[in-house]
Amino acid sequence: GETAEVTASPEANDAEYLSPVSIGGQTLNLDFDTGSADLWVFSTELPTSETSGHTTFDPSKSSTFKKYDGATWKISYGDGSGASGDVGFDNVAIGGATATSQAVELATSVSSQFVSDQANDGLLGLAFSNINTVSPTKQKTWFETIKSQLENPLFTADLEKDASGTYDFGNIDSSKYTGDIHYAPVDKSGGFWEFNSKSYSIGGTKSSCTTCSPAIADTGTSLLLVDDDVAKAYYAQVDGSKNDSTQGGYVYPCSSNLPDFGIAIGDYIAVLKGSDLTYANVDSSTCFGGIQSNANSGMQIFGDVMFKQYFAVFDAGNTQFGVASK
Ligand SMILES: Cc1ccc(-c2noc([C@H]3C[C@@H](O)CN3)n2)cc1F
Image (cartoon, rainbow, N blue to C red; front, side):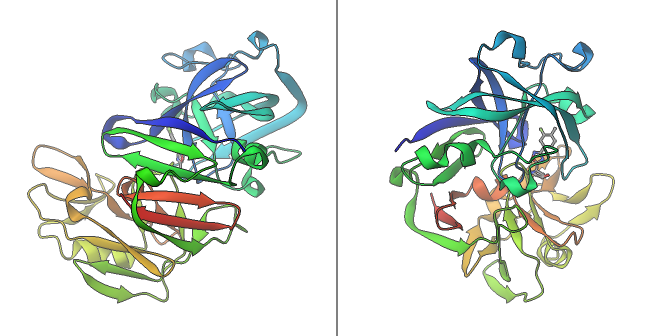
């Protein structure tokens, strides 16, 4: 079976990570997103006013592209951004592994956040295809299309702070982590890599929260979005912190010593170092936290703040998600 490895390069503030993907021989830089299941790209079908700075996929220049007549897609993301368009099939290669006749969703419209994010040429969903948005027939993700060709039906994420990391498909590279991999069973019925997270720790003090929302492993989200009462409890330990609606979340003096924060991945508590829980500067003395409230949306979203501190295994063979120290 095959294995494949591709670089994941961070944008400013590690807001997102982009990886090169070859579609019909054309290379675009896509945001691998384990929180969605559409592979969509900036295309020549967009108004040119919206494609400045982006690489666009041109179906007319691919000898292997096939239109999927009548099919459309439309997606919206957690931050209110979104895109829509039509569909075709082409050969899609990542790190030397090629999925043939992969559904490729061509954007004919994208929201302003995508227009201005010029490094991003589209998204590659790595969640489960029951949440793919193609109509009238949902389409498989790249990972689902290629899974049977892989040495093992899994992929791993090693994202780094202000540095390039990797996604690996088909194998677990033991040089990328230390100690054991701690797995939690995944409930994929909602389409996400979803697991229970019923406890947490702040500065080493553990709390159980039987009412805590389940969590999803989401490489497409920059931060760590936890239940509102947990975020409150965390920042109660940070002098001078406040939930500032103008900044969009919790801010605090950059001189603060942030406590460590432990998140439950099933029965395992993964401790995130407080020293790596600041997301960005608001100004020279005020900082914006990597831990933020999920506004009681009913789902906790463990994004890149977690992936930068823990090696992650997305195991579709055993429907489990695992983390290891690195
Ligand atoms: C400009 C832009 C906007 C959003 C996203 C985005 N990608 O993944 C996600 C999260 C939220 C959830 O919906 C699924 N995963 N959000 C990427 C962008 F480049």
